[in-house]
Image 1 (tube, each protein chain N blue to C red):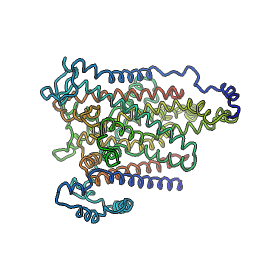
Image 2 (cartoon, each protein chain N blue to C red; image 1 turned 180 degrees about the horizontal axis):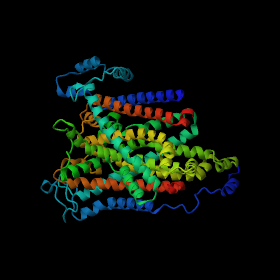
Image 3 (cartoon, each protein chain N blue to C red; image 1 turned 30 degrees about the horizontal axis):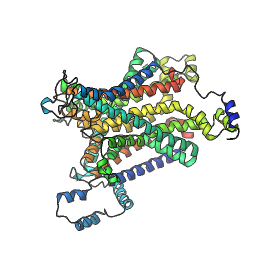
Image 4 (cartoon, each protein chain N blue to C red; image 1 turned 30 degrees about the vertical axis):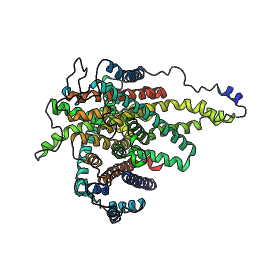
Length: 315
Length: 307
């Protein structure tokens, strides 16, 4: 168990380092660095001035050296300054991350709460009308573009019916306006998360229900509820944790699109605005923090999986 | 090479083709039919519409957001262009990205999967771990960063920046992030076939590696590869639509289902229907590819049918 965790920890750290480096190189290739913009804004600047400014900010150093400086700054929590928002990056990053985590956490909670009972029902009544309808629904969830679903939700519930706000920030404080603003984005993201969870639970349970230990339990007189919740479901749970964590990357991607459509001030929208506003430093930090969060969540899921499943622990 | 003629005669008795009776179910045929119809309509629709006098190119602000009528079957968009023509032209791009993305992803995945399986050891572990990490990563933020790259900075001449180049770039990005699923299937298939008795028998009887690859590996991997390719096509169409929606994929004036939706959002309060058609088109295309993938998966693995 210890060796396995150390290996997974090192792998996660290496992945985070690699992603950071690749992002840094990419951002380096981006058009319009800060000095280009300064040059455009002030035509009196000469090339000697530019060279001096480059030396001042360390931009004349080799790529690896600049990456080292950047990484050590970031790891010490010094994220630098956002040109787009004219505030320190940390000041805008953490509230946005919290806002996205609220959105993702709520969506995931609803997705699990719906997928668990419906997955059990569908697995027990495979081939029934309910099962077929749920399968079609999950298939739709896997195929629909998240941003279009968000757009459609706005058109139906905000434009045509006028029941819910189309997005943006709640005008007045209090819990009710926040909840009203959350209903549509959470519903869209929950549907996206529900589809793969439901399909996995249904398939995993059906597989487990055919196992000999389930037949044994049935032969010993265990009822359906007992068989499902004490025998079949625990068999599928460790993998479910991993599947859940793997969904996070996709869900974070979905959040970027959905936040952009709804104007939800979260990480996804921050990344989009930073890219569109040529604030590549902010984009770099934001994408990396988002990626690191997803990788760490996957590591946590692997640890949990290993605790739940002795085969991983020993193998 | 030695004795390969004699060998081929004896190995012929091991069926490389799946036994008869494994047919693609009606759902798969329906999906394939939908894709064929979509391709035909998008290929021949725009010239036909032009002959009928529908205009999807010139801007006519007097006719902006016109409702559906005899002169514009689906109405006009925010610049007075015919929506049906633009929808069909966008379909060409989306389907091209789908097919291109599927081919590129499958090619890259197959190469990396076979390489990992044959090299074993460190290379195998490294390729598969990178694949695992890619599967877990949030792809859209990374795609957004990559799509914002200026091709001029990478040494490409700026005047190349046309629709074809944008399609090529999306296909490349899709393959770059989509290969792990294919690579995993190909690697597992290659490893299990490497130790399969009919392959070992063929080897022992002196069959060349190329013969084994052609006669055993390719037919046996064709099923999983088809599944992975169909699913990759759906993912590619989704990636194109969201990138174009965000303004980082296919850029106007060229029409794509994704960038049509981003204009539709701007005029959503005046013309909510504009947001319907491109999205439905994306949904139809992606559902068809996914259904084809599912049907092929059932054909490749008969056990899946009972699930």
